[in-house]
Image (tube, rainbow, N blue to C red; front, side):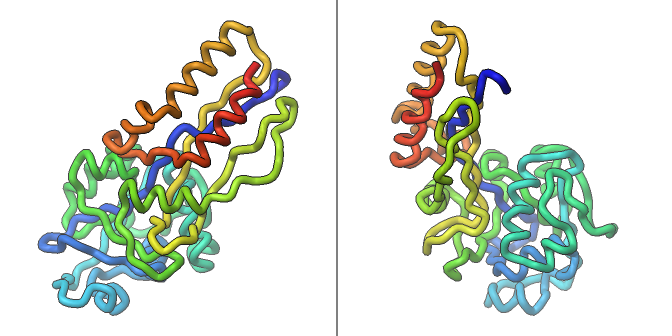
Length: 258
């Protein structure tokens, strides 16, 4: 873009694995298990690897129905990016994409958007699928605890999401034309004892060079969006407030909107 672009993180979200399993209020999925489920190589709820991580839980001898997105999706891109980072098998079999190459199986069901996937999980006993945390929270759909890089099983939520954001490392680079700092950063397999494994920031894209009045209005808007008042609303909407160090970087980059 000739006018240049400035990318500004505004909030962050988690991708969760929601499930429908009667009588199972807490489910732990090891990091060598959930990629294998979405690769199509672990197919039963009572698989020994799932059972070993969930002692005392009555897991049925039942096929796992896997619900995935039918549409091209940023949620799919973030989810498969994490799975590809932790599993060579998944990377080779499915890979990271907005529209992944899911296994051809009658146990893989496709549905559009987060609400479509959520609806299918609710309707199909023994199903499992990936959705945004906000949809799981809104619909009170149970979500699995996932094993992170440190070997701990972590539930999604504002605290574990914030722990992930604290580990994000931004590139030491600037964007072309605008010269603004490049605030594109991903945590495909985050460090940290309490970090939830699948988190992504969302960005606002602004023109670097634009009308003075528009630039001033946009700067005021962004300043509000990263304020304590606005960020304090994130959790209620199913998102993660940005930590102070990230907000500092946003405000520094905002100076490049002129």
